Structure formats: structure tokens, C-alpha cells
Amino acid sequence: MPYDYIPPLLNINNGKIILLILDGLGGLPMTLGGETELEAANTPNMDKLAAEGSLGQTIPIRTGITPGSGPAHLSLFGYDPLKYDVGRGVLSASGVGLTVRPGDIAARGNFCTLDEEGNITDRRAGRIGHEEAKPIVEKLKSLKISGVEVEIAHVKEYRFTIVMRGDGLSDKISDTDPQKTGVPPLHVKAENMESEKAAALFQEWVDKTREVLKNEEQANGLTLRGFATNPELPTYLDSYGLKAACVAVYPMYRGVSHLVGMDVIQFQGEKPEDEFETVAKYWNDYDFFFVHIKKTDSMGEDGNFDGKVKIIESVDQALPILLDLNPAALLITGDHSTPAKMKAHSWHPVPFLLSSPEYALTDSQTIFGERACALGGLGTFPATETMSLALAHAGRLSKFGA
Ligand code: ZN
Image 1 (cartoon, rainbow, N blue to C red):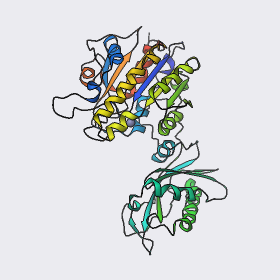
Image 2 (image 1 turned 180 degrees about the horizontal axis):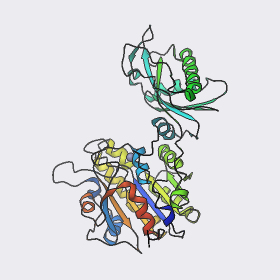
Image 3 (image 1 turned 30 degrees about the horizontal axis):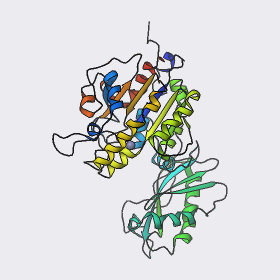
Image 4 (image 1 turned 60 degrees about the horizontal axis):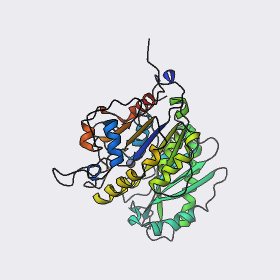
């Protein structure tokens, strides 16, 4: 359980919770004294919620640590990513929509360039693009290994992901990337006896790829790393007594939600209103909805300040669809900051808005923005405490002790 003290306190009631994540929401002013993306955005609905509710800011992992989206989401779901280790292979596979069940082994793969002696000359195969890498991945899909099922998918540029499924597989396997050039890729080696079978099968797969890759100019070799299996995290139902659903467009967020036992809802469309209408459609079927907006982060990564502002505004415009559902608690935040100024994720605290018409302790802040959140009533707190706040404001937690 992420927090052992929560399950004994749970009240089962009808209070519904929406956790709306705008990926990479936090930002920075482009110039000293300017506004952040969220502050610059025209967000009348969120500002009204801010005025009536409580603001604060979260620390995604630890102070000063810049998170990836996978661990940052685990944090928001209440699972400390430093305690619950979801292997890179699992996150990568989940990220492109491959399912990793307990006992399956997932790994990340890189194409690389080998010289005539089989030594690596480029660990990233000249950073070949999507167009070149995808057909190579398609060819690798035809490889069969007897006794196991192998799934592979392209991730980005020279990167792909692989999942092996079969009996008696274990994931204590060392990376085959030697982290330098001038040497061949390492053999797939088991780190303990239980993993020997899986290591041998992965090596067999690697050997078979040679024939497929031999005529490729740049991607004529590959390395594997981050071998991992599904860590079997405690579920939302066991941890929080919540029947939970995920409404997200991008595969990685669906994958991470699935790992904590959320139902992943399939729907058409990619706009905020498409996602919010989906919540409305399934409103009676679940206690908790995780809704994920990706494009705030994409715009931040592109350094597109105005683009990020527009995405935030489009979320705000669609927000009445969620408000009409009268959730007991609506939490709007990000998984981390992605300031357009930095074109990257950052370590800054993340703006957090809690709306709960019944229980929110209204603070003195009246707009949703980084600096208002820094002065908000909820203060600065670890993202892992988001779920206890949500449960409490939905009337789902009884008191601790007599
Ligand atoms: Zn993110």
C-alpha cells in the first residue's frame, strides 16, 4: 500500500473525484518580471475555482529533482517513485501501448551502427529518423522465438521497445549497451540463476536480428537495456477504495494508469472537450477520473510560450463540461513544470488547485497561477499527498485515532 494508514480510514461514499493533469503545467516568465504561461493565459473558469477553492504547489519527486512524466504521475497517484520502482523497460513499453503483465519482461532498445568487426561506431545509429526506423522495426516483428511471445514497437528515432512473454522469465538481466564505441554490444547476461532462461531467449532474439539488420547502413546493430517486469503495484481499489478510470490520449499515461489498476477508457478525439465528454459519459461508472492533457508539455518542450498559453485556455473553455458534473473534489495540476523558456521538464514546484464546494478552505488567492499558488492555503507539499487531499475533500476519510 502506498500509505498503510489510509485503507483503515476509508469511508465508502458517492463523493466523486476528478484529477485533471495538464502535463508540464508549471512554467517560467520568458523575461524577468514577466508572466508565466499559466499566468498569461485567460482562464476565467479556473480563476473562479481558484477564488472559491484552495491553491498550493507540489514537489513532484524531491526538491530540486527534475522528473520524467512516468515517475511524476506515479507520485500524483500516491506512489513514491523512489519506493515503487517501475523499471524503464516497463515505462517505455507502456509508453507505446504495449501491455506488460506480471512475469513479462520489457526492455528498451536502441539501434546502433556496427563496423565490419562488429564494434559499435555510433550508439544511436546516426539518430536515424522515424521514417527510417519504423520499417526496420516492422521487419523485426517477424522474428519468432520458440516458447515465448515477443512484441516490439517503435518509440522514437533510433529507439524501440520489446516485451517478451512466457513462463519462468525473470528480469535481473544486464544492459547490453557498453556505453562506449569501439567495442561490440555486450551479451545478454543474467544477473542471477532465475534470469538465465530469459537472458538466453533475449540473446537468441538478438542473434536472429543480425540477419535482418545486416544490410542496413546505419541501424545494423542494436542494444537492449532497462530489463524489467510489471512491479505489481497496489491498486487504486485496494489503496483508496476507488473504482478509477483513466481518460488520456497518449499511451504512456494509459500505461501508467493501468499499472495502478485504473480502467483505461477508449474514446474518439483528442481535444479537451472530447476527454471531458468521455468523463461525463462514464460518470456513473467510476468514483475517480484521471484526465490527462498532453499538449501543454509538448508546447513547453518546443519552447512555444504562446502555444502553451492557448492549450491552457482551451482546457479552461471546456472546463464547464466537468463542472456540470458537480464533482465532490476537482484537482487541477501538472505532473511537473515544462517552462517554454527551458524547452524541457524542470524541477520547479507545480501549481495546484483544489476545488471542493463542500469542504475547501478558501484562501486569499483569486487567480490560478504559479505565484498565487506559492501563496496559497495548501502551501508546498509532496505530490504523493495529492490523493489523501482528494479523498478527504470527497468525504472519503474518517478520523485517525480516537
Ligand atoms: Zn509530464
